[in-house]
Amino acid sequence: MPKDIGPRSRIDRRFGEVIVGKSKVLKRKKFPPGQHGKKHVKKSDYRVLLEAKQKIRLIYRKREHNLHNLYKKAKKKREITGVCLLQMLECEFSNFVSRLLGITRAQARQWVTHRHFLVNGKMCNVPSRRLLVNDKVRFTAKANEMGDIGGRFTTLSPLPWISWSVEQREAVLLSVPRREEIPEKVKEQSLVEFYSK
Image (cartoon, rainbow, N blue to C red; front, top):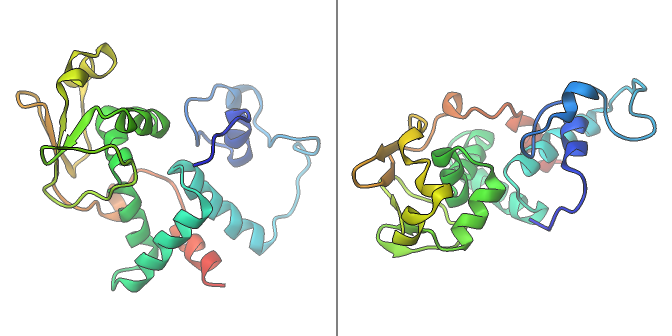
């Protein structure tokens, strides 16, 4: 994703919920950003679909063409396109690390690119790599010594599709998550309708 140099709170205020990270601005300013933020504007059908697509793109930190390519791959599968797309996003390496450690996706991307993890015993620094079922993710010796990562081992509470072993310090992708197991409040069907136009 391109470097975001703008205020993150504006993204959260635009959608009325925390999207990018931890934002305290929503408690004080519960209206969209900009000069006309407080005015009630009727949203067109196109805008509703666009905002649903943008919300997914910003949550999972994807560029537009990357998200569109994932949609094309999901469309070729036999499952429901929107659910399949979300499952592909959830199984990406950086998102897996984010879910495992309870950190933001931006921080997870940084730790992956800094080579703090092994996938099936091999070094991997590609955040967009799609993990397969039974893939094993381990922390490097360097990561075990780091306070930021090492201090989280005892407090991990991964989701149902992730298995975590404290002794081996190893996480396993048990299965592809079902739609009801994905905590993100997004409308994936709106994204499918947006791209199918």
